Image 1: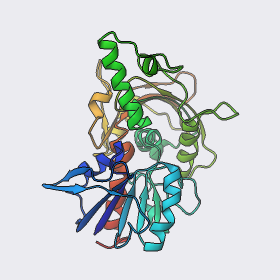
Image 2 (image 1 turned 30 degrees about the vertical axis):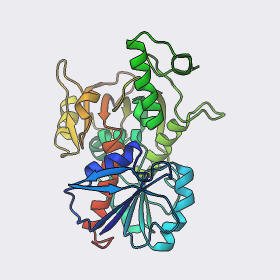
Image 3 (image 1 turned 90 degrees about the vertical axis):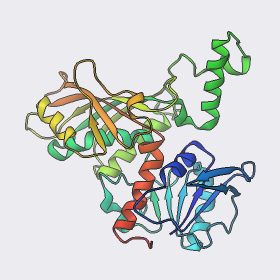
Length: 338
């Protein structure tokens, strides 16, 4: 299968290259594309050094599958080019997630949505993916009535520039250097929590909070699900965590041991880390293909609810790995040639 990665020099793009080897599909040819500024960059794949090429109109010629790791504006611009070439696209941007005819897929949760794809499959927002992975075993047994989530999101979720600025801030702080362009911003990243990711709408909801609610309803096929999110950027380089209060639809009592058992037995995509002084942290899930759940306790404010702490790697399961899982699912279902 001939594969292309568009936006390969970004954070998610580079993780795709790391994760592509040893998947359940054969790669005959891998092409790497990025901006003109990044063209000529060498990236290692297996024992070979591949040269990054500039994004261009005919880059999809002969390509069976393309991973988009670019922003929404560029994804919208180049998607018709892929369509004309007959290339199937797995898109990590938010550009097409809420389009009616575009499946929004977490393979452990709704792989059947791939059957109806029309050439474009969207991979969800990183926080949406991590949250739903933690909740899915419970939803299957007890249903969902309401979700209240507060996220604590890593700097790398904001892209390469924000991450590099954060690293510079750490170096400057350690050396007692206070550069106006880094530490005197209205909202510096270092040693602060910023409750605004993706800008604020007129109703006070941020872009990230809106994505979590809308995408969750679509993935779960629960258009009336009650969700309230507060999304916060924190000074952690990699790995998203979140506190989730969930109220269940079922009248069946949700016992803590039963909830732990459901999560523990879910499969390789989820781990339970829940005992005295042991709970999920970013350092546990970074560069891991699984998400983790812990701090499970009863929610005393509702009749039948739990409070959970969920962590996951925003660049792996929240981005690159989920996209690769989608590709593997396409292959296993015979929805793409190999």
